[in-house]
Amino acid sequence: MGWCSPSTGKQALATLCYFGAGAALFAVGAHLSYAHVAPQRARTLARDAFVRDYLRKKRGQ
Image (cartoon, rainbow, N blue to C red; front, side):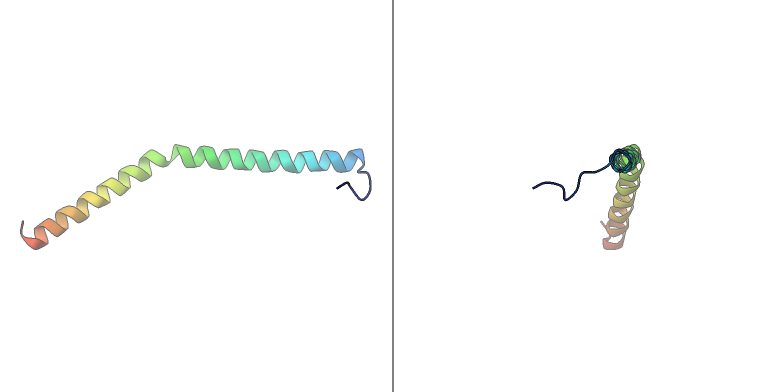
């Protein structure tokens, strides 16, 4: 399947710029997600320990 009409140099440059901007946004999002994994895991483990202690105290064990 081919293009309906040949693209101009300006259209190709715009396509490359949009693709590059999208790839950059994706990379920044992946980096921020990876950078914040440890604090999120620590909060989850602390909340889990709190709930376990609360349930142990409530049941009297």
